[in-house]
Image 1 (cartoon, helix red, strand yellow):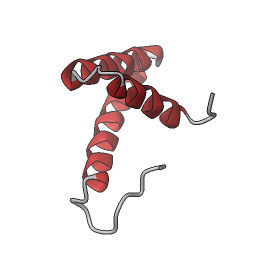
Image 2 (spheres, helix red, strand yellow):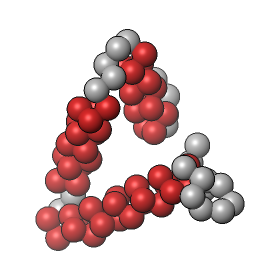
Image 3 (cartoon, one colour):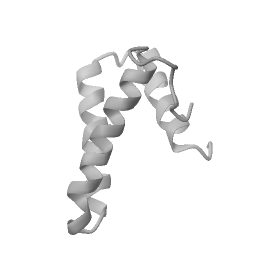
Length: 77
């Protein structure tokens, strides 16, 4: 196992995709459910801020990796 959670998740998703699990909507839904579980681990008073940060980071990273923002990606990998 890698020490990088991002790398582990990406590898798992890639393996499922390569083995024919190509229902991207279902895979995305499962990942969102995992994010919701993570947010629910936080104290109730922090959940709304954590959710807002996660959604903001999602948008930022998607734009960077998709090339919509100049300067490329500042994402971890």
